[in-house]
Image (cartoon, rainbow, N blue to C red):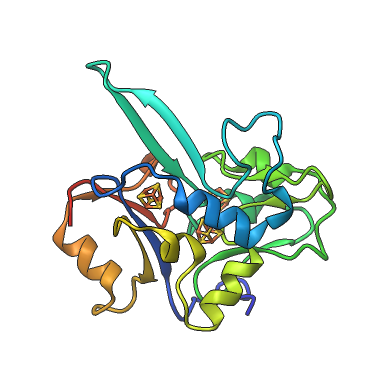
Length: 200
Ligand code: SF4
Ligand code: SF4
Ligand code: SF4
């Protein structure tokens, strides 16, 4: 359900990615596309080094020259520039604390894509509308009390999803127990995509 201005969400659902557990197998990326944009499977799109997906795989090297990999996706910010920027109210917070898109209100102006400091939105080449995590198919899974597709697909216990407001949820307990970080903390967006830095 869409939150009204100033209303607090009932839950604060968040993603956790454990980079120490991750084997870079790519199963989450494939599952995300197969679930949320199946029409993009087996298509090669310009600008993507991998499958077009709501998860971006970013490869680089650390100061010692060793290869590193980051899985980046919508952070479901609690102070989200994309929500503030959309002139048509098409981007909104729902009562699970997730940032969602109402495609019926969206005209494809791409202001939200430009506003996102995490560069996690992409424009669908077929309909010209923005896409990001969570896709409607994953919202439907969550509404049916299931985990999102990426969490279900991960064979390495490197992904989790749950309620930060629940002290007993697995995400809350993991974040309490293990060192973790968020991306671009100084941007002030209050992101809810947590990167755990040691194996669990
Ligand atoms: S990560 Fe980007 S798209 Fe996601 S809520 Fe934050 S600003 Fe919006
Ligand atoms: S929650 Fe769903 S939409 Fe988001 S990254 Fe995972 S599979 Fe993709
Ligand atoms: S499915 Fe799990 S192990 Fe594989 S790339 Fe995704 S997070 Fe990493």
